[in-house]
Amino acid sequence: MIDKDGDELVILANKKTTGGRMKSTVEISHILNTTAKASISAFMIFLFTGIAFAQPSGNSSGWRLINYSFKDGSARYEHVLAGTSSKMYDLVSHKGSKGNLQISQNRYDDKTRKILAGVTYQVRWSDPPAFLQSGKKASINYQLSTSSSISWKPPQQSVYLNQGLQGVYFSAPDGTKYITKDMKETLTSEKVIEAGTPGTKRTIKVTLGNGYSATYTYEWK
Image 1 (tube, helix red, strand yellow):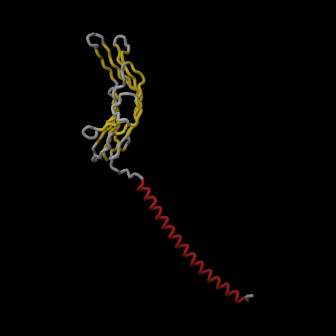
Image 2: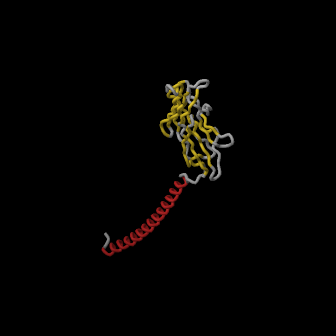
Image 3: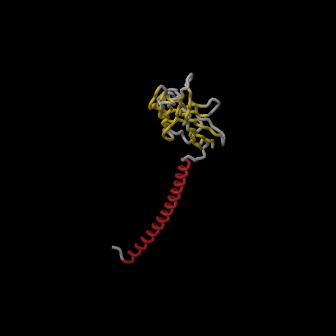
């Protein structure tokens, strides 16, 4: 057994020892917490910096879409049948909106209003990319379908980029670039997009036939 004085000495010794250990533990805990916070801060800075660099900066040079325009080919053309006094007229019209148009061209007898010939066709197309990167090709989806026809067929259609002296057409996988019959394909530029200089402009023109067209204008920025 330990006497009272001895017991007090032991307790005091334990208190000193325990107190010393507590102080060391607090100091170590403080150091660890400080280190952990610094590590977390460094990691967060790295994380957000990494994310920032991983996202597109928006400053990459390339062709940026700045305008879209549509040319309406709706019109009426009058004709006189060769060698006669009979008159006839062509009426060109359309329905629909951007990316989905139904275009009609019909020839009527001016006196009887009877349709002598005509064609109605549907064109669906997707917008080209809003950003064209140099060194890569561009594509759009294109669909032509004939709704009705009396002697006539849909007029020639195409997608054209005014790049270089001859320009660049968009073609189907089988090489078709002048569209004259029903089809549903992805059309891709036959050459890669070339780089430009600040302020220069370039266009992709979707010719829909019968005077209709959709033009996308880009600027190198």
